[in-house]
Image 1 (cartoon, one colour):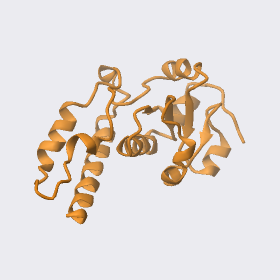
Image 2 (cartoon, helix red, strand yellow):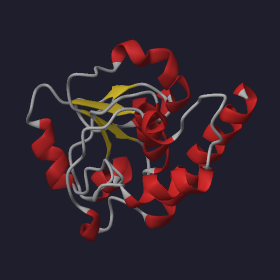
Image 3 (cartoon, rainbow, N blue to C red):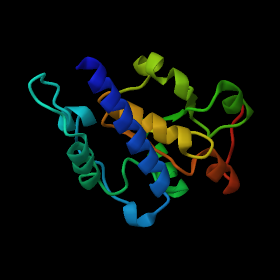
Image 4 (cartoon, helix red, strand yellow):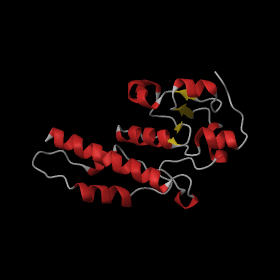
Length: 174
């Protein structure tokens, strides 16, 4: 049963990530909105009791139909700038160290995506957190991953570094 649950969770994660990327969430103004207060996606959708069968299709349907508008995104550079005026907001660049060092959004710290789970102690649960990367792909994976492990305060910036740079905004190097 444990192997089956891990397989179902992996499949669900792939489906959510694919949907997130396919829809281009964050780039579509009709998807703007607020983030609901929810726990881990799996706390709400999948019951792990050995006596109950998991209905993956209805679980995915429930998740997709209850997905909030603006699914955990900061949709524009102006919205990001406004969010960063709050000193409590933490901007995390999930690109690789060499990418980050060649240029990043000022005030961003670097935690590469593939090391995210080893660095959860650096990601607060009680402050706003925004993830950024080069084009939005890795930040989407990071947001989904953090939500799956129970973070409720994480959003992505789909325009990411390339959108920031192309808009002529200030770039920091380290």
